[in-house]
Image 1 (spheres, rainbow, N blue to C red):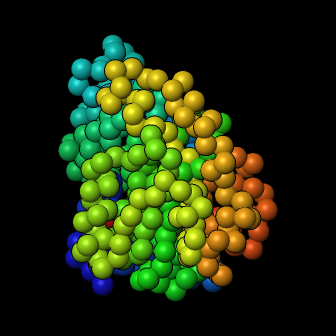
Image 2 (cartoon, helix red, strand yellow):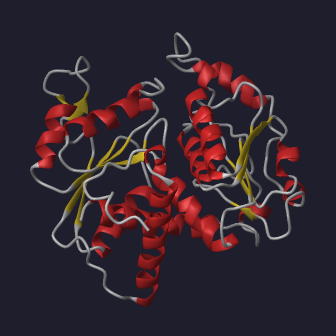
Amino acid sequence: MKTNTFRGRDYITLLNYSREEIDTLLDIALDLKRKFVTGESHHLLSDKSLFMIFYNQSLRTRNSFEAGMTQLGGHAHFLSPGKIYTPALKGDEQAYSTERVSDVARTLSRMGHAIAIRMYGNPVGWVYGKANEIVNEFARWADIPIINMECDKYHPCQALADLLTVKEKLGGFAGRRFVMSWAYSPSVEKPLSVPQSAIIGATKMGMEVVLAHPKGLELDPEVIKACQVNAENSGGSFQISNDMQEAFRGADVVYPKSWTSLENIPPNSARLEMEKTERLFNEHKDWICNQVKMDLCKPGAVYMHCLPCDRGFEVTDEVIDGPRSVVFDEAENRLHVQKAVMALTMR
């Protein structure tokens, strides 16, 4: 267990954390979960403040962070960019409606103990990587930890909750076939952060990882390269499939979720071309998680999703409400892993 590498540290992507450090976060999360269920007080962050800046709407993320800080004895401040001077990068300022990120980060650093940010999609015009740039700009200027509540590249809080759920349900990671699959949705405005962080986490922990998607829905090449390195270092494996049914065959974990096409958003495209993505999506309406596909998995395999899901498109009610679904355990685990992150980085 690592004990000396967390204090004051940013939590932006699991790529910056070693397997031993991830194991430590999971161990602490399980300990805090036990305290939660038994009603044992665990005020590890008494009188400490977390500033949460939400550029996007949220149910699980906002409430798990707010509840988590309360249970840790601290307080979470909800900050809507429209109600403060919206933090902006140099060159993106607008008079009397924005404030440079460097100024916001340094101001909040004098008043609290961590800053958490959620930003992707419309707030940055779907320019891939820009939200992550803003999160890292906060990290550059802040003297307190920056926690990524989801950007356009990474969702490390969801990935950690996913790993905790796998550990609880399957007992461990080695030899487990983890399938991160694209699934059809009538909405094309889906960030890539969840699938990218899911495969980063799974390859870090030595799982047999399969990424499944139709052609044209490839993930970030840098993330793919990192996952290949992770798998090599961890003793697991990583492969890509364009066949959903074949990917599900023999799986221990399936995680079917929609994401948009990198090819049709800036900077890979000169302009936002969601109409092209919509046509691509419509060619693959059969990419749905139903009972027929679940029957291809191993006995005891689990269905996962970060939620909210598009019922009837990404997944059938029979699956998500069925005995193999662990989505609400997964959602609850957001609370416990985020408490672990905050307790270790903000102490």
